[in-house]
Image (cartoon, rainbow, N blue to C red; front, side, top):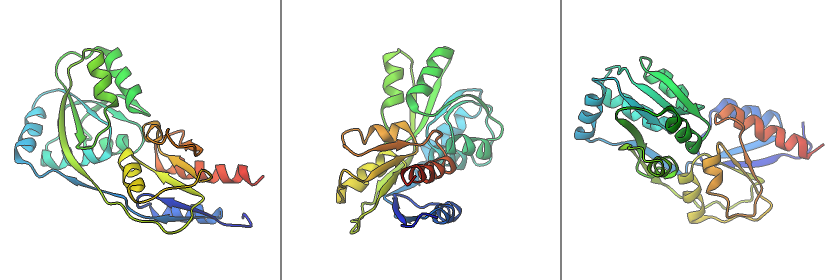
Length: 236
């Protein structure tokens, strides 16, 4: 056990098992939700999703929230899709919510995923299910390569900024939206370490002088273990 506890802010709720794991290693994680996501209640979009599900199509997911929203719109219908998706939580959501689909490509970040799609030279329609505040990395890469991509917004991200009135040794960010929401009401000193679940989120922090540590894999378990190992190394 470290002699002095480390205090970390998670910018969204975290499973109690990971909070407990960090605590066992002398790291206290406070959790504050800086964004809220809600599925779009749009009947025309739902009808379009169900229509796309009637034939074999290729679809793209870069967010678990998009997977859950699409699954709800399908009303228990299981499509025979070919899927490209982000690794970690998004892949897990696809396997859980859409067991009938075939995952043909996955990657740790949106740019690498776009490269895989382009390299595979997909024939036919390509649908991208996303949120209203999605980053432009994947669509921009596809446009540059001349690949037609149909975007369908299936969930809304709402920023819920909160003023934080204490110092933290580190801050965990999970999405570019979470970064934006945090800095609407807060600032940090350069000695605060940023931890991110992936390279896309880290990119939004590139203007800061702070050390930014990216999880080797885009999943919560790896992220928390990375944080634990980081502070163990600093204290040796």
